[in-house]
Image 1 (cartoon, one colour):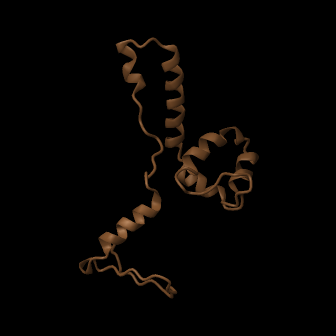
Image 2: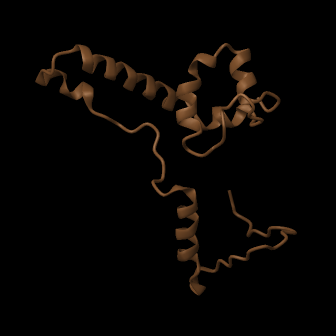
Image 3: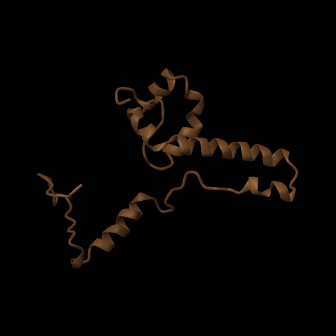
Length: 129
């Protein structure tokens, strides 16, 4: 999965017909591109677009078809509840990091944010497992 790019994986496994669904669940989230020239390994697509997300999306497609064809009787209303499958931050990831920085800029947090620095190592406390 690391050797194949997303487009090559979809082509090799005859899954190109799913591209629209995968683009929505992957690219909209900002994880990367599913474009034909993408160099992103297929592993990352499969890590983020899980079977649960995929089947939920298919379920919503079936619900959309049923909404158009079934009369709007009370008995069918529970079938038509809209549940978000893919969600995104309305202001994007940049806003998440900005807010996180504001919370961590407190001297009591124990976190120091240093920009434009070279990382030479990371020291972590040992965690018992």
